[in-house]
Amino acid sequence: MPRSTHATGLAFALVSASLYGFNIVYARMASFAGASGSAIVVYRVLLMLGLVTLVAFAARWSLRMAREERGTILLLGISTALVGLCYLSSVAFIPVTVAAVVFYTFPILIVLASPFVERTRLTPTLIGVAAIATLGVILVVGPALGDLDWRGLALAFGASVATAFQFFAAARCRRTGVVAKVFWIHVIVLPTAFLISLATGQLAGPSTLALAPLAVGLTIGGYMFGFILQFLALGRISAVAAGIIYCTEPVVAAVSSALILQESLAPLQIAGGALVLAAIIANVLLEQRHLKNAPLVPIAD
Image (cartoon, rainbow, N blue to C red; front, side, top):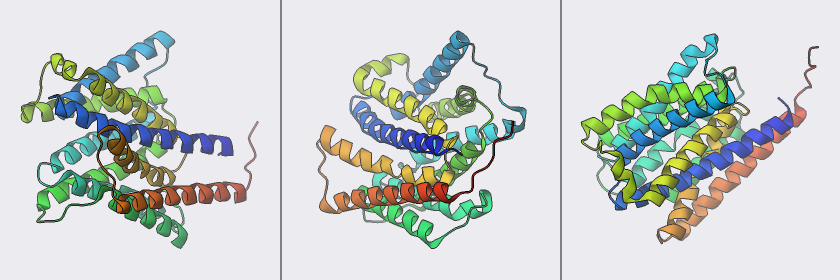
């Protein structure tokens, strides 16, 4: 893979993770105004499907998926739905901070599974980088103390496992265009989001979005652009590289909450953010060195 393409993938992943981090803060602001998270999820999926269909029609882009990737896209849709289902459900049993800590174990899961899934060599350096990133996330989100319900822990860990599946599947799904992937994934996610909102009694009309138009708009926009950039990134870099870079998300969320919601950051959280950034920089340098040392592959005429 050309170095320029790989660098672009790293940049896409970093911007995507940052957008997801901002998205969490504005979702919390929307909830303060009475706009439920479940309702926002349903409408953002509907909006994503509508916009993707409109853009594809106007630009005459195909929404056809590659025949050999139909199973992979099905796995992508199911895993994406499970991420939302498990993560949102986990906070009904455990504090949000604890759920975030458990959920953000997915980068280390990706690193540990990569030798079996992507046939990559698991080096002590790579394990160390993933461990540092995970430790940084734990310090940033600051897990709450007290008795924890095993159901919440199981759901949060289930979301982590589903995210690892999502990243590996996305990294392998490179023949189907990004627009087609986004469309079909959300076709699979929509029924799940609808049923969750219906079951929890939080399925409200579109007027609920007007309760906090700016926060809702930024929440939906952050998700949509972040999701598209995520799949643009995963078509250019490995799941391992992306997984570590996505540790940026909770750091951005913590800093954004301090600046926007006036929530204070403890020195331990600042130290955790520094650890995450150090791990990301180390990972990028390792990836660049790997590409530099990789043998050149001649291009067939």
